[in-house]
Amino acid sequence: MAAHKPNEVMQHTMETQFWLDRWQRREIGWHLDEINAHLQEHWPRLGLERETQVFVPLCGKTLDLIWLVSQGHRVVGVEISETAVEAFFAEQGLSPRITETPPFRRYQMDELTLLCGDFFDLEPAHLEGVGGIFDRASLIALPPPMRDRYARHLRRLFPSPIDSLLITLDYDQEQMSGPPFSVQPDEVGRLFEDRYRIEALANFDALDDSPNFRRRGLTRLRERVYWLKPRS
Ligand SMILES: C[S@@+](CC[C@H](N)C(=O)[O-])C[C@H]1O[C@@H](n2cnc3c(N)ncnc32)[C@H](O)[C@@H]1O
View 1 (tube, rainbow, N blue to C red):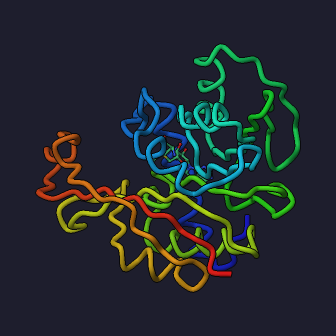
View 2: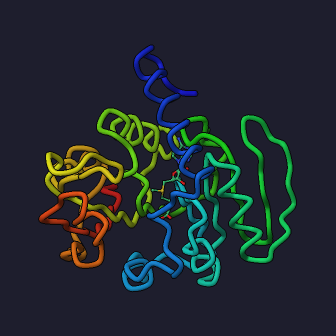
């Protein structure tokens, strides 16, 4: 694990357990039984070649993996929960080839590779050839100090920045505790603007689609779609 400070290590362990427990209890309210509409609408704007390999961090069992493959991409996802990865392949009726490549278990099926393990254990070699990133509910899954680590780790994985589609939520963090955490546009800027031009593609009032969050106290919920364009 690429954590250095003891409190980072402790927070990381707690976070990991939190997600494993959520999957164990099947409390996966973030999961969509359909392909993400923002992905389908905005991904083509990135103008990536069909053969481009795409990285999906903290991928869960999202159907977006399937859509990206259907667009001609090779796709690599990372997900810490084995329950999630196994469920993904079982639900798709796919039988991947499984190999042990510590610290990851690698599931491979045609153009799709899922690395079951910790995002923070990824090394640049795992993602060699990747030319695009799709982040939905990944950055916002993490509490504030871990978001800094997430951005730092992405920088280490991709010393040359690559086009990314990023989907966030923001709301009054006083009204609800995460996850999902509120990530305001200024934080997206703080995390990424040294290497990226940040183009805000769309934003929506997402409260009506999230009755659960309304019940938890939210009076405002904004979903935003960004294109992070490499500056170089
Ligand atoms: C909110 S869910 C989003 C999943 C997916 N992006 C989607 O849109 O359905 C966050 C996912 O990240 C996974 N996760 C959390 N921390 C992780 C880590 N350090 N490394 C890999 N996966 C992680 C969790 O198990 C969970 O499936």
